[in-house]
Length: 158
Image 1 (cartoon, rainbow, N blue to C red):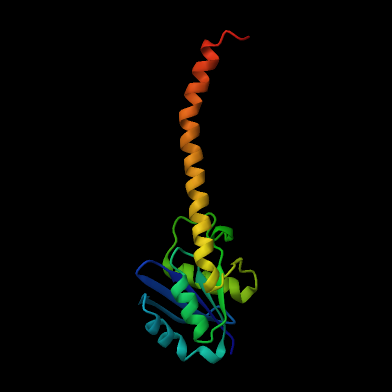
Image 2: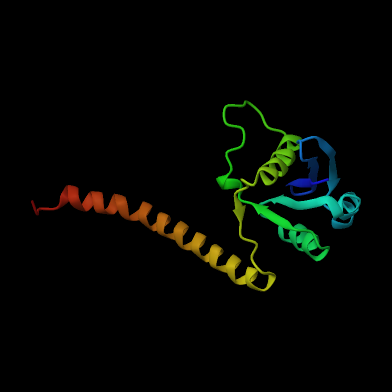
């Protein structure tokens, strides 16, 4: 039997869904964000799990690292590249976790790169610097625009 797991990760809890080859739900449950609880929930399905998809959020490191260390094949979902519920009025964690597992089962999951643990600190610093520089440029431009407009309005040059 082939199984696929999706985990909708939040700041203090995770919704875990496991589906089979026919998209039937085998397990669906919310857990506190405690690695041992999640590993225990997955343990009885481990030999049949072809992969575990984790939603890429700001806090994915601990879960992805723990799952990989426990021997699971882990996929990081690129949530910005997944059009999930186009046209639907609502979404729920249960659906999100199942949807991630479903995309993995179909082989169409848009994945993010799982940076090696050693490189993450540098990558995070680069991202923070880029964000800071972008914000600083926007702030500087906001101050410069009125000055340039005033100069153009009062300039004697045609």
